[in-house]
Length: 496
Image (tube, rainbow, N blue to C red; front, side, top):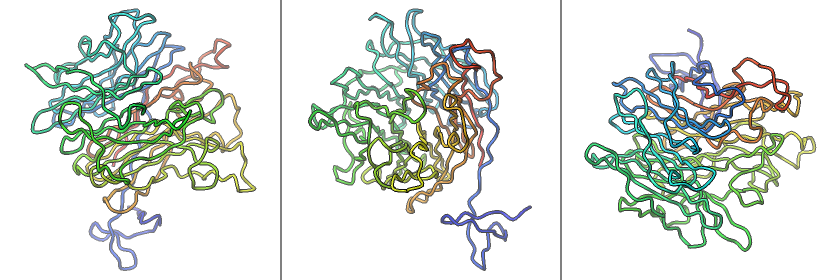
């Protein structure tokens, strides 16, 4: 056995194992392990010249039934339909099928999946046609605990609201599925919320109702739910408050009171989550990227709850840094990944912590090359019972470390982790999971979806994401670059 490294407050020291402890100059300390990262595996490939993106995933919380993982994603060819994959061995082997959705003239997208404590998986999504139709709306498909796949769709609501997100929770022995969404009608955009409970052995949805905001003029976008160890439901969302002709944007959080559709702001205190960020000037919740072309970056915040400590919540998001080093600023800077933590159930939040460790943008540095800006974006976050905080994101720094063709931009998938004792600031360690995407190989050169998935159970972490870099080149059609590869859903199996 070689001499292991001890990571302690940013220092890397050699240590000698003595009875399970690490001795450094007579001082004993517990060493933090490093993960074992398995090779990338293909969950599923899309047909040739097909865009495939926005993977949602969940895993069965009861390991005695086997580590069952279900992933659902969108396929664009050219209409949108859904596929899913099931793994019964923790992500090693997968079987794939089309998700039965609505009629042939309908498109389905924005899929998400959650799992109940009894092993029932539920997938939700919106469906709409080119013209308004009775089939439009929000839908769910159920996979019972012993079933090999999903059943037929059930319509939840007749309006195809944007970005439905699903989570499962349990209070006083009663389980519930919660769906958060928003009305994307320009100028309105209220947050919406629905609950499903088990009635007569079947999951039955109540009304989809509006969440009351602070002010009638406030807009809410993309509510991301999370449930803590007590079964309390939280949602983080993009808050847009009118300021003259423009809006001030911030990430905010709400806590469900357990009474119908009533949500409150935890704490009602200035230290409650109200984190401003810096969207583009067009007042949309998409940033412009330094990836060539009209490549968009969603400024969506992801929320996670600690699985055993009900007071710890975590928020991850991307934002620009500009104007001066280390300070938030305009859209002139590059995108970075940030995490905030609450240790009191959302009453107060820590300052943001920068996760990615590349060089900070500094326009005051005379050696800084204005063209060397790299983005980190589309983060996901998960927390395990051993106090490890896991984050993944897309990263473009590799493309600036080599002379690459501007039309062939490379995007890596990065993974970072931090150990959280609930007191000290989070300190992340990062590593690349290798190149995920070459932009010349994308079917849609400006869109790779708005989210990926990150799961954890026991000592296992499963990032699921879209990529192109694993496949053999095939001849292009003259319009998509010299080669064209199928897009695919990929996974790495990470062990601690």
